[in-house]
Structures are given as C-alpha cells and as structure tokens.
Amino acid sequence: MGGGTEAFPDLGRHCQNPDCRQLDFLPFKCDGCHKVFCLEHRSYKSHECQKPDIKSRKVIVCEVCSVSVETTGCNEASEKTLLEKHIKSGDCDPKNHKKSTCPVRRCKEVLTFSNTSTCKTCNLTVCLKHRFPADHACKKDSMVVGKEAVTAVGRWQDRFLVSFASRNGKECAASDQNSSKASSSKSTPSVKAY
Image 1 (tube, rainbow, N blue to C red):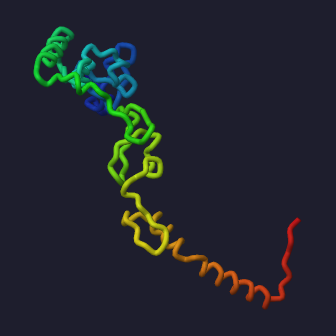
Image 2 (image 1 turned 60 degrees about the vertical axis):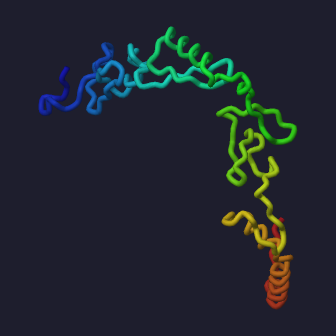
C-alpha cells in the first residue's frame, strides 16, 4: 500500500482502516496488528485491533493476602494456575490482608494508591484529608515564633514568619511617625471621594 503524491510517491502512507484510506504524511504503526493508521485511527479501540494488549502488563490481586501476581501473556486458564501456585507457595499469608489506614488520630480512611499522600516534611503516608503538615501534626514542622531559628531550613514561609514576628512592630511604627510628620509639614489639602 503506497502513498504520496505524483511528485513524491514515497511520501506518506494511506490509513489502512477500510472506511478511511486517508493519506497521512505522519502515519502511525500499530504495535499489535502492525498496520499503518492515521491520527484518528491510531488507538487500538478506534481501529478495532485484534491484539490490543501485546505490550500491556496484567496483574491479578490475590484475594487471600492482597498481593499482586503478574500474569502478562497468560490466558484465563494459566492465570488461575498461577494464582493457585501462589496460594500453595509459602508467600501467601492471610495475615497480610489487612489494609493500611491513615495514621492520624480518629481517621479510619483506608489508604489506596489514589487517596494517599506522603508528607514532604516528615515522610508520613496519610490520606488526602490530612496531606498538609498542619492537619497531621507534622513532627518536623517545629517552627518557634520569635528570634529562634527555624528547623525546616530553606522554607521561605517559615523564614518570613520568624522575621515578621521578630519585628514587634518597630519598623511599622517608625514609618507611620515619619509619614505623619511629612504629611503635616506639607500644606496640600486632602481630597475626599464620596
């Protein structure tokens, strides 16, 4: 199946979807059926590929111990035999079936891959409700307001809060007094908007 134009006969390929046959200058080759398709028909689903899962990985989760067993390239019968082999081996332990929960007090949220967050400060794995350090009583987040140093070095928010607390309003009061003296020395009338 050639492609191209009269001037450039080797340029591009025609889509091998029978309903399309569009000339595409950047065609896609399917990994499963090894046919050439246009942008619209490049996905397995759009061209109804017979071998869509040639490069995908398949995993079965053991119902006894919640361990994933890889079954890539196996049919249903061999998947069942792999699972039975796993159960009969010494690796399958029903005690491991317990699902992990959020370690925050009074939170019973089960941690899964989609609702888990790891704190960057204390490396504690918590649910999404408690992902912020203030929500899970972060151990390393021990900032002391005042002139003491901040334990989390490099965090600009903490450095700002420490410097702000150490000011005690001295600079603000001094600038307010200077501005009031400057405004009283000037005789410009103030304009009020109604």
